[in-house]
Length: 277
Image 1 (cartoon, rainbow, N blue to C red):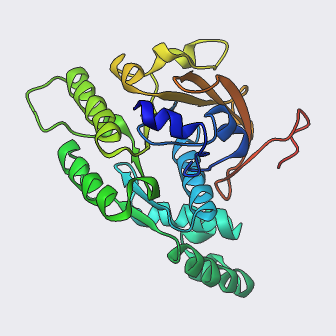
Image 2: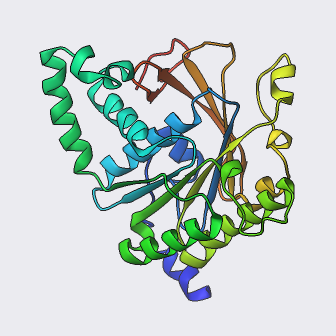
């Protein structure tokens, strides 16, 4: 470890996974190895869309990166529709019945976008829900693609099943959280897990979440290297706050994102006038 620290003084880190520029700066340069990033939000705020935007930005920045989404809430086809909507800027609603809802110009653009997305190293696994099955796939793919070129995303952590069916929900979630953290350390990879928040957020005048709002247990907060929350100042606002509330190796702070809900695309806000980057 001493030798590695001395080498780090001379050799810049080049294998950060880049997502959003301002968010990356808070993380100290981007997502790095051995990091468990928890993204928490109340339902329908946009945490899955945020994760897909992170994934898309990362894959476009690094053509060698493979992102694997373990989707326990939506099908692979639903997630691919979202990605295609983001890239094409064709409303997501049109992708649900494109033969009828898209005009000829949109269909031409959609065909090109589908090929673009197909050229990215994006895997969507919607068929397994057990933590040990998920861990097995992550171990295989981290070895195949290389630790610095693989990013797994779990959507979401409360839906992952423990292999011990005797455990109550709280202890089962603790086991899942701890297993995900172990994977980052064993394989030297970053891992993103989405998390629901408890209802206490809805009862407060300010909708800003805190670490204590992580649902079911404090083990998620304990295991995570980074915890970020998504929330809106006002219901229905297109501007999301992405607040980093825990960061073992970087800064705390808030990044504002403009959420184009019809296409699921998110871009960073430049200033208070909500200009987008």
